[in-house]
Image (cartoon, rainbow over all chains, first blue to last red; front, side, top):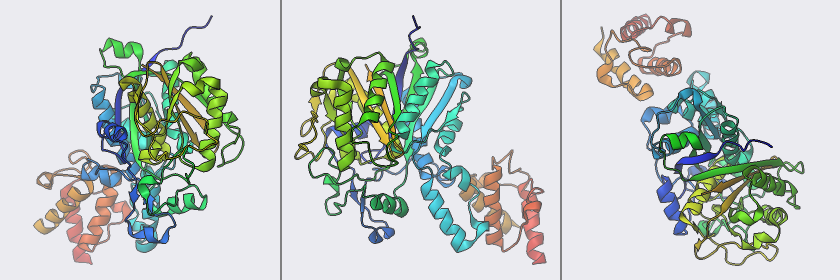
Length: 408
Length: 81
């Protein structure tokens, strides 16, 4: 007989997204079915085949020096982490029992590109001495760790668009293993720049609906043609249940489990059988001691690519069997666009709120469900749900599959 | 001591490291008093080179502990140039 794992609860939430500068405005935007996508207006956009994206809704509230010495991905992580920490009650914690797991899929790519321009145009002496800490993919984790003096470890798992979820899964492992009592976990991404857009466009991964950005991200719809590149950050404060109880913390819900697998199929294309994704979902259920019948809601990865959405639908039926017909599925990305390494973290926030508020935000732009997709995708109207558990999927280039399980 | 150089340094320190210009007085040390870390100090030096049309070799930067050290160095370097 094995000892049940330490319970991990969520006590703080923070986000800055294409829908709003904090969790409340983002959630309100999701319930209202708003789109954060728009036509981009930067001067470099005219050369690109894709001219839409989902940038942050608001300016970042930072001191000028913070803005100067931190990559945009670090700035966003810092803003979201401050909100999450305040939301958790700004607890006094033993710094040696506090860890940070903050992921980015790409790292400081905007810094890399702009400083390369400085090097070429003005010379080596003008390159910022902050450039290396700004572009390293563990930069955001370091920023957050320094802000809150996390001394139990600072981590930045990198798994492309699964990075945010993997950071949260790592946070769960750390607390379960007893290496920390509190983990600030999440993801951040700031990659709205010419090179990433050009690269994703060359992969045929992006929607080309330049004339109708708000209807471009259309997960599970027959006419979907790729994702919309978004940016933002989302952070959760994870806490050992007994630690949260001892300080009388407000608890949103539990991070009940996490499952991780890998496709070993192709660097970018999803396995059409969904086998790897299904293994991650099953592993999350086992990790959480849940049965498929416990699941009432799934926040799908569902980026709006033709192949990805289809493979995920297959995977969910494989993993949950016929019970999938009773599950309310939604795609946050229909409104926020795809936040890459922050996507899983934002969708973890949204999953927790959906369970707690017992309402699933409808998937936007689902005019006609793809005939091949046998899922009950919530569309048009938000849907009330009963009590139970929720799953949040994230998959990434490289064949990464991560599934998080939440209960309230 | 040149008030122009001191005032110019204060502008740079505010821009680069968020230091309140009122705190920039000759006896203050960059690291301990003004909380300018070693990376930001590099930015201060590069900005000062540009602003005052001087060269401050990396080896000399280590000797610039206080604002007054930097003002004197810049004045001397400016005269030499």
